[in-house]
Length: 97
Image (cartoon, rainbow, N blue to C red; front, side):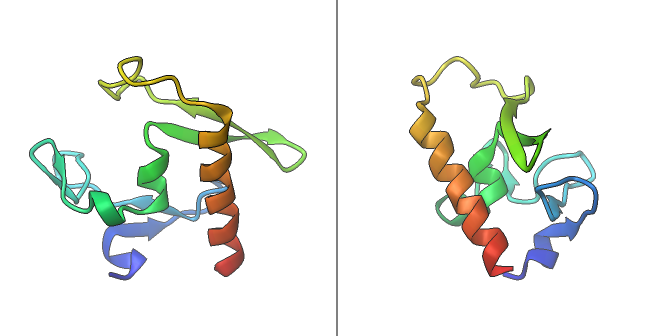
């Protein structure tokens, strides 16, 4: 599936180049009830969720999170290596584009 089928290009949201499209109800187009229909092949932005990168200046970023996720605080403690892997994947993706 091409990115344009489920996302729209955005500018000024560094490091993100796309934003996922939503249904009229404001939900992800891949949600069926509470289930992700593309979980095994979900886009990188979905793998980040509920975390997001925010610019911290000097080409540095920090991870923050959204309070809208009902699972915050319910799973295992995530280690620095988890976020490093996500960030490394982002860098690989950006280089490919």
